[in-house]
Length: 241
Ligand code: 4AZ
Image (cartoon, rainbow, N blue to C red; front, side, top):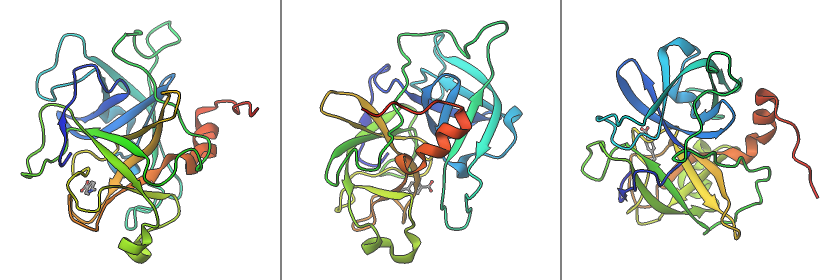
């Protein structure tokens, strides 16, 4: 995160790290049950190579309390395009504990973030937050989880032209002082409603370098994929009232 500050150890309760081999190159967000959302460009359809790490704060120093959960299934959006980053979204289903209906023991440091059901829940200029272990302004990745506030930015095709597709969304600031960066991919952009409920509004996807004026970070617009998420998790429709 460019322009970020260290999070408190249990601040970003839905933040997960996706470990492949000994490496962590992507983040993800816990959305409840045995499910994590991340970017399609972060994963391959090889569940056995991944571990999901919860309550991780320092990437390189695992505290005793960090849960490490194996993966059962990786579901990459069938219209993901690795060249254009269209539909850069993937679901990770974690393995259940033996003889149990859960994937890890319930833990006060972990809570799920809500999946938004409508692209109209938040408006441009709303202040939201991003988090990750990715590159900082100096180009180094961070050992400690960093976070920053970003604003939702309207009409992003004015910056990216035809590289900007439906299902994408931009956030940051136009000066380029705060941004996500390489290593933050797959991680959460979260917005809070007036009641304080947190929604996973975006997934870190791509951008023209990091922290560049007039080139805000591009995110997968999670609400656009609500039906896809519902279908693949098997979750029932929310009751609209
Ligand atoms: C990357 O290379 C990357 N500034 C991620 C996010 C952004 C740019 C690049 C957004 O993974």
